[in-house]
Image (cartoon, rainbow, N blue to C red; front, side, top):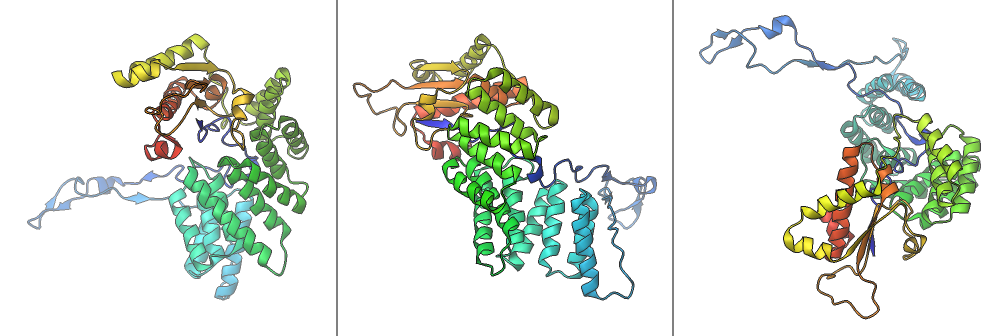
Length: 432
């Protein structure tokens, strides 16, 4: 059996992170207030003609563009040497990041990089500020420069790993794998140091656990979370991640305990309330589950959305509409199997593989994969079927239109399995 789980955490579940792990949570857009600045004179300036004369109008000129800049507030003595200037710029960049003043932090770090282009910390801080400002392409380049100067610096490895694992925007499996590799390298390097740094080691272990959970390797994630909690027992984000791993492994009683303890440390973390609500739902504690999910929505209304839950008959209409668009031969094949609608996955289905499927899956294909269309069914084999999970799909989107799109994409993914495609085949077709 195969399932669609890469997108199962979108919207309601993908974050599954405490706000403290988001480097740029709440930061303003990179170009807030910016735009092309063209003076009235420039708009009517004459343009040289091929003959050497001047042509009225600016049709031949690109618009002048000027980015607004938040100046670095560092106070540097005129007599200071380069080392003192660098130290003050880096210290000020760190202070500005601590105060979520990412525009000023970037300017300070950028000035430091101009002063000493080989400063690993300058490029590291440039990357952190740019990532918080949503300028991902520039952040990647800054981090790449830092790593090229010192590929084994654990602090930089931690920052770059966090960028790929927890950064804004969509993060695919390759980004998660890259983030995991960087976090693992950082863990190895910090362990090899003569002077121990338990907080840094705990940071890296939590990042590893986050990536492993998101990659569907929650059994491995538990080991890294336990390492983090040995190093830093009071970390709410580590307890949260432990709860996520236990939830994905269908150990709901243990997950409830982990999330409950995490909330004693980070009581206003929306994602921990959300995950506790989903866990309570699995335990059948529906009233308490609803209260926790409502609390999550109150705490993070910009990031979390109410479930777009539609009635079963309307959901069935969505399925029928997708099937009707298939070519005749495919439609006949699909109409010959059972397509079910369930609110949530059956525990038996979740436990059909080891480690189990996470409870947040959007859909599931039951049957053989890889030449399924040509291998005859054997006596006693369960007939192929597809099931779509109404509540999980409702939580994976923000709008009714997105729900239609997600139902379609999930159903076509599972039909791909019916036709003999495995997860890698579907990934290559852009159908993850």
